[in-house]
Every structure is written in C-alpha cells, then in structure tokens.
Amino acid sequence: MNVAALAHRPQSEDCFLTPEHALAVRLKTAVDNVHSVQVLYGDPYWLKPDEELVRFSYQTAAMTKVATGQAHDYWEVTLQASYARLQYLFVVAGNDGSVVLYGDRGLRNDSKTARLDATNYFRMPYFHQIDAIYTPTWVSETAWYQIFPERFANGDQSNDPVGTKPWQPEDHPGREDHYGGDLQGVLDHLDDLEALGVNGLYFCPIFKASSNHKYDTIDYYQIDPDFGDKALFAKLVEEAHKRDMKVMLDAVFNHLGFASLQWQDVLTNGPASRFVDWFHIHSWPLTPYHDPLLHQGAPQFDTFAFGPGMPKLNTANPEVQAYLLDIATYWIKQFDIDAWRLDVANEVDHHFWRRFHEATTAVKSDFYVLGEVWHESRPWLNGTEFTGVMNYAFTQQIQDHFLTGVIDAPELVARLSDQLMLYQDAANQAMLNMLDSHDTPRLLTVAKGDWGKAYQALAFTFMQTGAPCVYYGTEMGMTGEDDPDDRKPMDWDKLYGETWQQVAALIHLRRAYAPLFGRGSTRLEVVDGLIHVTRAYADQVAQAWFNTGKQAKPLATPATFAQGYKAQALAPLGFVISIA
Image 1 (spheres, rainbow, N blue to C red):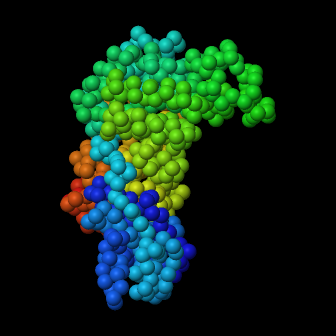
Image 2 (cartoon, helix red, strand yellow):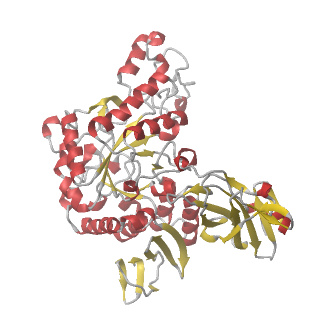
Image 3 (cartoon, rainbow, N blue to C red):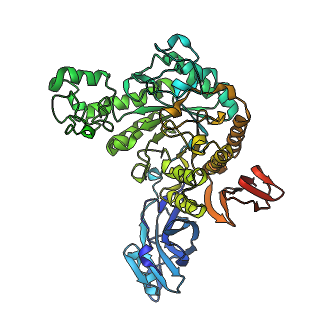
C-alpha cells in the first residue's frame, strides 16, 4: 500500500458539517491502490467496560469511493452523532492485503489495542452549525445571464456618448468604442430574458467610470450617465424581482479609476492629500509613471497589473474599509440587490473580505458574495469570505476536452474530480460555471464555429455542480476573439431563432430540476468510451452520457433531453440526459 498518499485534514473540505447536521468525512488514497476503507467513530465520551477496563466504544461505517482524480481516489462517508461531537479513525485495506490505521497522530498497525487508542482519533469536538458553510438555496438553483451593459441593447439614445457608433453586431469593437448600450435596453428585453429561462442577471459594472467597460470606477454611488440613473436602476431591479430574477452587481474594490476624486486629490496635493494613505505609494513624484515593462525602474505606486490609470487601494486602511463597506451595503439597502461579483478579488486582503461578508449578510442573510479568482480558491471559501468564485479552474478543463481536445475524456474526469474534492459541498454549489465571459474568447469561437460541439460543452456544464452562467449573445450564436472582440453589440436579429431555442431548452431543463442539479451529489466517470455524469438528490437521479469521440456508441437509455441520439446509438458530439 502507498501509505504516503493517505491524506485527511480535520475541519476542512475533508471533514465538514452538512445542512442535515451530520458530518461528511473524506479520505484520499493513491489511485487504484486501496481495496476498501472503514471509519471507526463515536462520541469521545462514550466509554464502556472492556476486560475490566473502561474503553472508548466505537461504531464502524464503510466509506464509498466517490471520485478518482489524477493521483488520488477519494472516499467519503456521512456520519451521524447523537450528541453533536465525534472522533474517528480510518481502517485502510490495501490491494496488496495490508491493513493500516490512519489517525490524528499518524499510521498504526491494525490491532485491537490500536483501535481503542483514542489519542490517535481525529476529532470534531462539537458540531457548531454557525461554523458550517452556508449556501443560500436560491444561489444553487439560479441560471445566470451575464450582461455587458454597453453592448447589450441601446434603449435610450438620448444618453449616448459623443461618437457612439451604429449598432452593428458584426463589428470588431476597438477598446475605446461606444455603441450606446444602457439600462433601458435591459429593461426593454426583460421579457425576452424571462422567456430564455434565466433567473439571475449578472451586470458588469454600471457605476460612473471613464471607460466603456466601467472597471475604472470614478464614483461608486452614481450610475454612469451613459447607462441611466438610480431611478431607472431601481425600476429595473423591481421588474427583475417581479419575474423572480436575482440581480448581481459587479464592483472593483481592488483599485480606483484615474479620474476618481481620491486619486485626483493625491495627484494635486501630493503627500499633503487627505487620501494619501488610501493607496500604496512608494516614492514621489507620481508622474510620469515608471513602467517596469518598459525598463523605466520601480513604479512609484501599486496598481492593477501595471496600469497607472488604476491605482490600487490600501484596503488595510480603516478609512478605505469604511468607505467600501458603506458602498457594499448602500446598494443592498437602497436598491435590494441580491449579490456582488467582486473583480480582482484575489488581490484584496482576507481581513477586508471577512468584514465585507459580515457587513453584507447582516443586511441580507441570503446575500451572495462571488469572488473573481481564476485559481485554486480554498483560502476564500471557508464560509467567512466568499460564497463562491467564478469557477474558471473547473470550466477550463471542460474547454480543454470538449472544445479544443487538448486532454482526453479520462483526463477530463480526473481533473474535474480533483477540482470538486478541493471544496466542501456547499462551496461547490455556489460556484459560477461559465464557458466564456467578457474576459475570454466566446464559446462558439473557441469551438471554431462548430455549434454542435459548443452546445455539447454547454449541456455538460449545465449538468455540473454549481450555478451555470450564459454570457450575453451565446444564445444568438455570437462569435468573438479575446477582449475587446468578445464584447460585440448584441445580435438581436437572432432572437428566438434555432440557437436561441436550443439554449433556452437547456436552461429550462436545469430550472425544472433545480434542487437536483443545484444540490445533488455528482459522480463523473468514463464508461465504454462515453463520459458518464450521475447527479442524485433525495429520490431523483439524473444520468447523462456524452460522446466526444469520433464514432457512434451503442447506448440504451430513456431520453429526457438529447442531441444526436436515436436508434439506441449516441452520435459524435451527441449527449443524452435521463432523469428519473
């Protein structure tokens, strides 16, 4: 047995409380190295006489292998505790016939004495539900729709910026171009979005800023005049809520825009500015900016990337914290928004995000805090900072198999399994799963114009744990390379067309079985050359098969929803979903 591969961390993604007040326990072992795992468990204070001594009395439960990753098999069991506390020990049986005990203080040879040695048991001292990660039910049951306001729809030409270009979906926008999209355009198309089936609207920034993308904030308390005003936004939120749609705003709390009052005061007054400690300033004068990429020496102040127009905020400063937390709660209190998406979230300190989570959920207990983190995110997903993150690390694997073929099906399943096992169930359920966004090439472009391939990947994503998100225009079959080409004006001529109907059908399927897909368990495997996904929740089970090979595969199953499936054969690029 490869004992070096045995791994478990108490009170982590390996041991966590469930909504049912039980304890989920996981153990990692080397791939195909272990035959079975049992867990010995019981109340640490439940002692019984044994051979004239008082000893710990344990129960035994078999663990189930729930996933196989690149290097590990993952075993899991859910344990109940009558008195809200447990200690537990693993009995691991290798394929070579060896048996070891794995506990808090290391490995032991299996024996009665070792099994009764309570000092080597892992502990969950008490089941404090307040420490459990909480995912609002609505989050896991939401199908999101991402809107880049400047390119969605021009509903009010009176607020168009000077130089606004004609609305041409086939254009290739420049970085400084404006097309006149606004909040009135979104309001005008709410019924279309309702028909599409989405029940969550994720807006890229709408606050006053200099650029068309609005990530260089000037004033967080103002709606950008190019988009409308607060009265219009309030009406938009009200109308969205009438349609049972949640509203998520996007904000950058990592940096301010060059034209912001605070940064302009620093540029004007230098070290005497009352905002000087709001930023990370290293030397004076601040201009001209020293760009290290151009071999100009060390920058005088910290920025987002090396952009002098986006000076980084000092979020350890109590004044900055108070300012940003007031903004965060203002839009909840005054406009009843349901979520924040936080740009460049990984570059802001954890202390601030803990305060942010506490402040927002104090106003609205089921508020959704979504962080933009493109990499492994455990430090933020402990229940005190983010509810979930934009799940790029997960969906990148889907792209690498379904769209570009960089990895094969077994590698896809292994990588996705590893990603799922990084987090507690509640965190996985709150992830935002998207195949494209304003920061990536469009789905159909990555698929090289093959809609069948793109749709198969989209269907697979909708089968996964986490909330799916559709980028505006995907339902119209829009294309676009990386930023800014992925931000073309919406092609409204394709509304209710064939592609739109296919995407709508997928969204409505997900919504129809929202608890199953939102909170159900997930099992991924490759069976007879097909990728097989099993989702289970309560008395419902969904099974899906995806053929990403080049030959049709025999398959006999009821079909709730399918592409390329007939006469008990699944064609290349085909999938079939069966729900019972």
